[in-house]
Amino acid sequence: MFKKKNKDTESTELNKVFSIQAKYLKPKIMLIDLPPDALSALKQKGYNVILGSFGHPYKVKQNSYNNKVLTDAKLPNYTEQEIIVIDLSSDIVNRTTEREIPSDYKDTGLCTEKNGSIIDPRPLAMIWRRHDSERIINHGGIFIIFAEPRENWTYYDPEDQQMRFTTNNWSFLSCLDTEHIAITQDNGYEIQINDTEKNFVKSVLSKHTKKIEFSCILERTYEIPSKNWCTFASNKFGQIVSAVILINTENKKRPSWVLIFPHMKDKAGFLLELTENVLPAIAPYLFPFSEKTSWLYERTYDLTQVNLLKDNVEHIEVNCEKQIDDIKEQIEKCREENKYLYDLLNETDDVLVKAVIEALNVLGFSQVIDVDEESRRNGTEASLKEDIQIKDVSPILVVDVKGITGLPSDAEATQAHRHATMRMKEWGRTDINCLTIINHQRNIPSLDRENNKPYRQEQLDSASQIDLGLMTTWDLYRLLRSFLRNKWEPENVKPLFYKSKRISIIPENYNYIGVVKNIWPNPQAFGVLLEKGSLDKGDIIGFETPVEIVEYEVISLQIEEEDVQHAEAGVEVGIKTTEFSSLLKKGYKIYKRKK
Image (cartoon, rainbow, N blue to C red; front, side, top):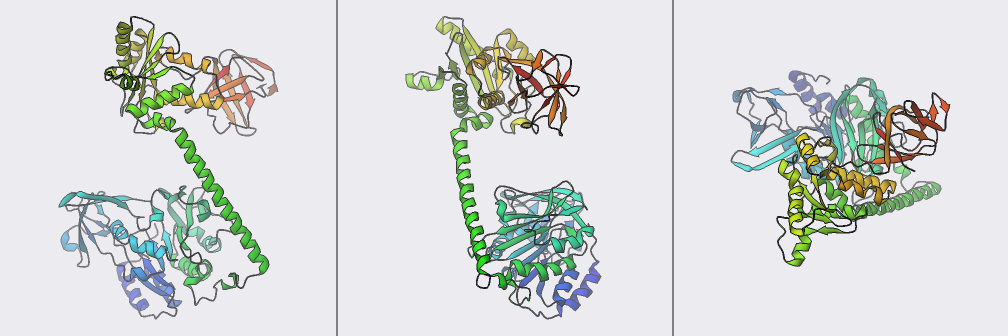
């Protein structure tokens, strides 16, 4: 990061700057942890500027048990400020013993779980001042931030271990919380200015691109409407390094702004240009003395034709907002109607059993019995019985369902077989199959789980010997997604559940033919190495992605750039596609649907 001046130089410069009288009473500006030359640049132009600080991180001995949090935060008259400029980078003060801690450091009464030998008190000051920051932003204020990666800190009361909380170095505003914006570490010097009309800082920012260093990237979540977000600049990979968030306030004429920038060498010059040439235009109410105020474009003075166009914009925005709200309602309705699909991935006990039953019904089974529910109706004990029975055909299928946080034990994997054996004795019949369905590692995202071998080889071997089917709810979810997407017939799916060992999601009317060998983005096409069977123009193929099977009609076939109607195993065939190229990856298995 760019170096700051030493403390002696800072003190000399500050003494001179503090004596400069403000020419403009408005806006009130606070520079938090900015270098003194920024204060000097604004003061000399007559702006009403003061310095503040969230405090400074400091070093303690690596093996020290002294992890109490001391702070030198100073935020004078913070509540009345209208523009807050924050530099999230900070010098680390070396305080290896308590004797070296100056008198202006105060004990917060809290301790922290130290990050090595560094203690950072700034997130405490930020969270303590969050209410005041929210009040500023809700009344038309502006926050300008020179960004650093988000870093979490945990603080606690040593006399009350229950009083423990975690906050971070972006905690001064709720609109910057993790649910609104993701801020992750990434470093670089090369940026690209977003050249759009909405980018009102591009002319100022472009003057500093050669001396910029970013240390993090930004990503907006759906909590921030796209109309309230504008990207100022991105890195060479298109990831955002500078942006603005528009905050709507109760007073529509006084919106608030949060501007986020990377670090730059000449922050003083940049801030001065921003304050003189940009901020008066977006927030004229904060700059009553500015010659560059945009009162000319207020409705009273603007042209009738322009006002009509503004009305059209507002009308479109209102309609778009309504359409977005309608779509969000549809999303929530769709999620609620298909709740069982989500339950398959993270639930356990009765909720998971009911989700499996609904999935089986969707797949075409008609005689699916909830054993616990039936036992409650009959007033019998069900605690030592299976969860589900499927009585569509012979054999009857006895199903055990479990949700667990790890991988299945031998007892969990084979419990359905024990229940099937009990039913054979009870019912006096042997045409009973068994199936175990387990939601394994249910507390982590499904694609991050051990999906290749959730059942140990010994469990698979045992299942083969006792005719036990083994399945995960992720398998069932993938099968269901593929079934619904491709409109499969139930008779091609239901037989899968009566097989032994690990149940495949590949339907009965599929034949394996090969794998994706190559992908060509231009023209959009992919190559399939035919290992078995044959392929004809007009065939329906399905490629197995990590989540579902996607079907596609073969509209063209090429062998060595020559169009063909038919291809046999042993060659690589090229297939054009415009629909699924983004889903394809090398190595995906390809199946052909039987005619």
